[in-house]
Length: 390
Image 1 (tube, rainbow, N blue to C red):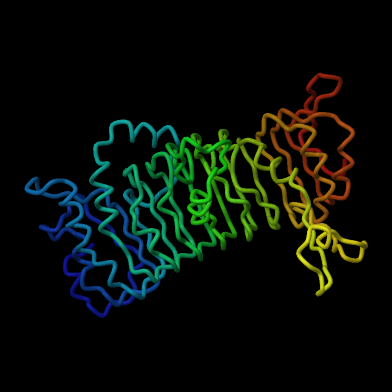
Image 2 (cartoon, rainbow, N blue to C red; image 1 turned 135 degrees about the horizontal axis):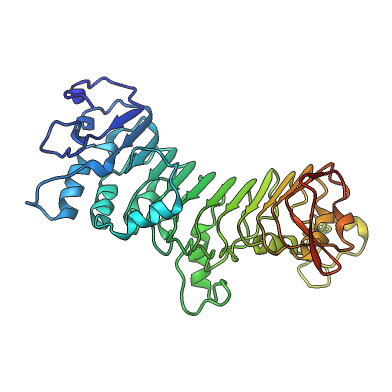
């Protein structure tokens, strides 16, 4: 960035700030200190090439990184709505093998962790994206962004879990892309069994990761991710779910109210089966004079029970790509997905010829491409594109 940018104290729009290679708090090569006095910035700010920041050896790496990052003074920029912090050039089009090889010889873990800690924005922030961050843990200030609506983590070296995402009551969109070391969303204890918390205290802690406002969840290329150690009951508002390249993900909260789109690609079918096999829910209308005894809670007539709500009954689009195992159980539960408008099955090897295909006969648009259906114990490939009702 040009020298002297920081003198434009009334500047309100700076959507792109490029950190020059070798910049620090002691140079004028487009360093983060150019942002210090720009308190009127509003809207969008993307800072790229944070990996170019360097400094002298007079301070410890962690102290120096924190000092340099604090020069940006992001916490005082109360009008910013969107902040993107990129340790690279902002281009997320990497291959997983390329990112893994880069991390293998990485020595900047503590530096990046301290740098991110120093770049704390104001709590008014609505949208946050972090990419190319090599630190093994996220910063603790993320949980203070109570107004945050959207969070994106792209090609970050986060290890084990994301417990710092606690306390985001307004988060509506969560996109995790290329977190190749991530295993769980939350912390776990040895006394947990099958992902369920075994005591009241643990359940209360779980509620912090419940994401009560979450509408869209994308988990893409997280090959080590196994799920939630302590499973909340369900996502109450989730509308879009995309799970791609997460073959070990077998345990997660259910999503019975999902209504717009479900996409599973190169991943386990178990999250879908867990939700499909949930018992339907209904509301019992009791007389106002009813007591709390067990006998009074039982409906005495059909009029006291509203229509049962089956899981995923409002889902409109279902995409299954490269799923190796598709048991007949998924078809058995499909008859209750009465709102489905489109099913697409691509490159799936485990389809079975069963008597349950009629359960999706109500779907107007069914596409099967490059899949195999077992007939008489032998897998036979479908035509290149099979369209229509089965």
